[in-house]
Length: 206
Image (cartoon, rainbow, N blue to C red; front, side, top):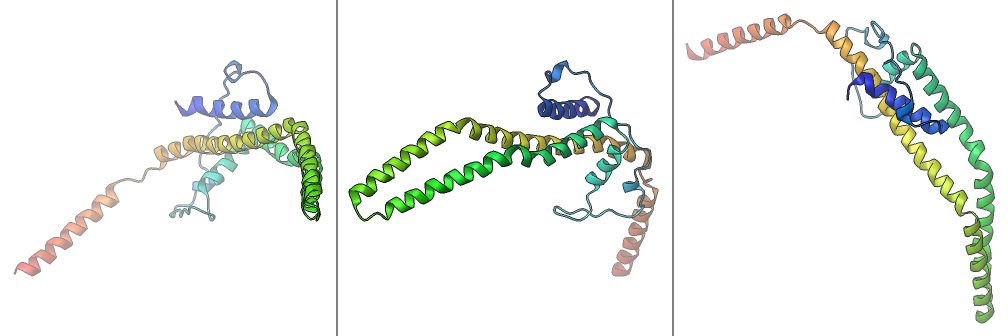
C-alpha cells in the first residue's frame, strides 16, 4: 500500500474510532500531508545520532513540523490531546466508587475470618461473598466498558505511532532524493586507500 493511501486511512481510522462516525471506507480520502521543503530537523549537515530510548528522535521532530503545516494532522493531535484530558473525568467517578466498594468487601471478609466461632464465621463469609458476587454482576457492564476503553487506548497509541512513521517516511524519502551525497568523495577515498595498500605491499615485497 502506498504512502499516499495509507496516511489518510490511519488518520481516518483514529478519528472514526474516537467519534464513532461512519465506516472508514465511506470517508473521503484526504491528501497526504504537504511535505516541507527542507525540514529543520534535517538542516544540520552533520551526523544524526539515534538511540532506542530517549535522546534525539528524528521521527518525532519531523512529525512535529508536519503537524504545524497539515490541518488533518493538527486535528488528530487536538483530538488525542482532548481524549487524554477527558479520560480521567470519564472514568474517575466509577473507579473511585468501585475502589470503595471493593475495599469494603475485602475488609468485611477479613473481619469475618477473625470471628472465633467457626460456624458463624463461615456463615458471615458466605454472606459477604454472596453480596460481592451480586455487586460484581451489577457492575459487569462498567468493567467491560473499562476494558474496552483500555483496548481502544492501546489501539489509538499504536495507530498514532503508525501515523508518525508513515507521514515522516514521505518526508525522509523526498529528502533522500534531493540531498543524496555524490559518490565521488567515497570513490576518491577508495582510490587513496588502494594507493596506500599498493605502497604497503611494495614495501613488504621489495
